[in-house]
Image (cartoon, rainbow, N blue to C red; front, side, top):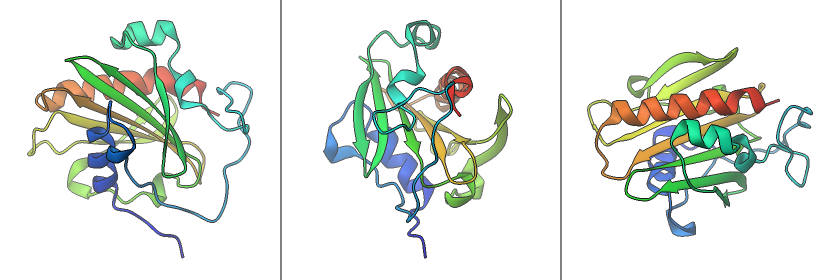
Length: 177
């Protein structure tokens, strides 16, 4: 049986980790199968998977208002990349090659089904908390997903965080297998 962490906890831990070291990293559910090979249109990682730091090229970063380079990191076995725009916001992209959208537990009241490009996606934000955080979760086949988490530095303006997360998701999506 697969160990599953409620996505709300994953989301809160991940967005609070923007710009932080290993102590603030979220736990991604573990699985017993690996991800499949990436297509030539994706950004390859050293082991053949998707490299989250190459999902935003310089033009994409400019479009998204990100004027810093991404910092590669690992969040409990999953590749991630963190961009922190000082005094403004942070973006973390996590490539989970073990858990598809159906495997992620999301609180129904915080998630909205949507599409980004031709992909099924979920937009996750707790509007009542109004904490300036938002995530867009993209399906990448049955057993993989990409999580784009945005956290505003002042932890206010959730709609702005969602606007940023949707924009980044739209920029990264065409590069995914």
